[in-house]
Image 1: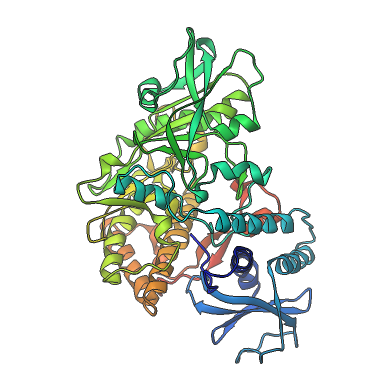
Image 2: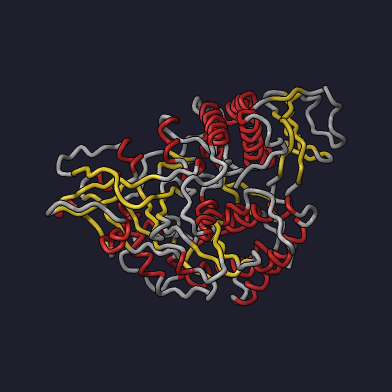
Length: 543
């Protein structure tokens, strides 16, 4: 999703990037700190946030007010001394009484306030915010207007374009485009730059191979090089080999080869359009919150979960990108450095005349459709009961954030099917399983409370709030009607499932849970330790 700004597209890339960085940072601070602390208010169309430790007040105009604090911001963030100890409702301050602050100034102000508030300093925070801003400026300057390497198939090319369209990144992350390492090193592999490259290949001695599933049969479609006698082939992200070249002389580098590969929105997951196959590679780069490597249990778990999910009924109009095979090097350290998971493609989920896009691409810009309420009802009928039934009916917690859902559209652009993907984030609730599935690692277990929190955040706060905002940007004034439709979808599923207690808080207006990306970065904690904060529940009051 993209933090949309009111800056004209003709402005220099640095100006647009700086404004976007400021808006993303402000949106995080509002949701995670200012709103919970009670130091934020909206006066007319202006958001004001008081920084009590600094004696300052921030202000920014709102182009759209969101019921879940996912506002759309317009124009610069401004700062002025706080006049008194309370925030007074009323009109915005007169023009000239406050001073615009750029992204760097805002990052330093919020870092100083957070230091005073938490008693903890973070000397990386401002650098990461500004690194993300500068990366965005580079992407805006260098992104080709058109795909330089299309396949000629409009369905496949349209799908690839959706994967490579998230130029601004997550709108509720303080540094959505920050990536560890040398900034120049990732340009060649950036999906936002519409990049294309070839896989690198390792020849691994038979005795050092760990794998499962039909790995060789699937990679044969990639036009790989020949394997030396007594060795097996392992495709690796070329960026990873530049970061972590093999140190064991038994691992032979065969160089780049095979069909063209396109990086998807996650950067490390790669798509081969000509043969319709995905590869989820290990990449020792920290992107947003996480180091993007495949732990050994994630490799084995992907295949085991694929087998288990074949026994779980999905609705007729919902598909799954399976992960039927993995391969890695059976040596300490190398197993995480070079582990690769294979994922099935999109074509089996499409019928003539249909196209498929990543849901996050739909949320990244104003979404204009002929009949937004009809479109929304069709979308909700696909997504809401599927995710809630998987969780409450089968103990399967799918992370239904918008990068993990592909939307199949008919020739008129109306949603007709969904495709779920990415088994890394998929978890199981043992309390809802007859038995723990064979070979699925215990790291895939959630407690009921964890399951509820993750479903609420991914489905409602991240996914539906983002798409509702995009529709409201394309059709101003309809957002409240969109959320009423979400409530009706939850009510219908609630009734169909026998009124499970887990859905009662949603319908009774209990605040929703939102992941605190700013706070987890401020405290330099692991992503799995990210705190959650409460945001308003737009589904209404008591049943």
